[in-house]
Length: 268
Image (cartoon, rainbow, N blue to C red; front, top):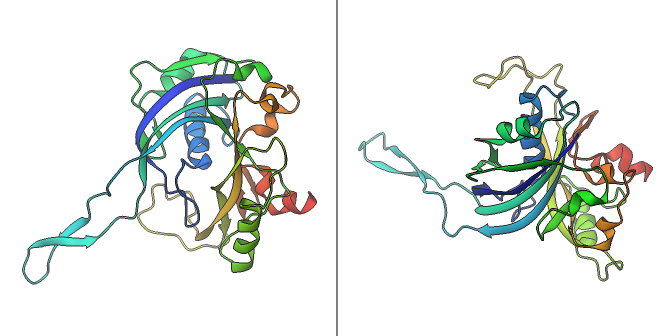
């Protein structure tokens, strides 16, 4: 069932996505929020899909205060680390596809007290309503830009210089196709550097039953498209699901949309 959560406001949202992208909330953060809501409501794990529509992103001035600790010699507290962060105020609407859930009141209650990329949602009254799975789902959304997954033909990159160069060339093309939105770099997932089945058990983890492995971040291209554009207004029921972010885990890759998985990427 499709739901629309309108005009969510969150402060101190993390806008530092990964090693390669910053300035907007990560689409993976919205997927994480959707997954948390879905599990609360009894949806099957990793089945919730999300389409965020950004209305406002204001980057906060200043930086987080450096962490301090007492000196071993003098005992005087002094800064030991300056946190690398980029925080901001975000207003966003979310289209949430939550299988097996049909009650918008339950979705509204599940959103209370949640966070977007670490930033608390502070709406006094959260608006959630059921939406139709076709182009009309955009009718009640305030002006803003839908964050869409890129086509599978677009480059993705990890840390290899050649990959990053190819990625930059597609991110900033000499000329865009007519009707194309704004290309932005975003975090799209991770490539595992260890096998979860054989990775050593790590200490002090949140859940000892979940394997923890080293991984490297993956950067991809997302497209910001106005919710008033003909492109979205003419989206039919069959094409709509492809616009949603949803987890894809296969082999060494965990990504936020199948278009960013190397297998799907190569087939395109």
